[in-house]
Image 1 (tube, rainbow, N blue to C red):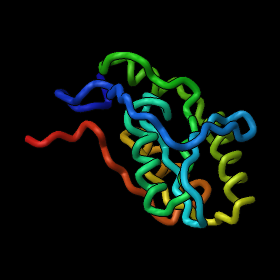
Image 2: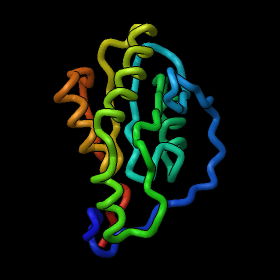
Image 3: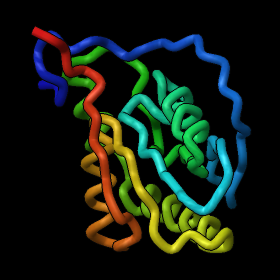
Length: 152
């Protein structure tokens, strides 16, 4: 069983050249782009923060005046074809480690003046963004685009 519906597209391999910077926030790899006092925290899909179009989406929001952070919250991003292994990867993620990574990033954002943040969760990441919001209450809004939606 896969969490992705039958006919979903495989992992996207994007060749975009990011314009932001790679940070290390207390051991958490984070892609950062933009500036200002309007913060967005992007939660990646199960393939991880360095996959697909995550960075290009972050850069688009930065160009619109947002201060965007894309942390690698996953313990082990999935790297394989869609199918049963993807569910094993999802079930194998240690939510306590992921929450600790999130807490470090949010503490950093607080030092910059962010007390509320908008979140964009991709695919599985939107589920996790909702879990984070329920636990910590730091998101003012969450958007959840699903990259495998297709026009029929």
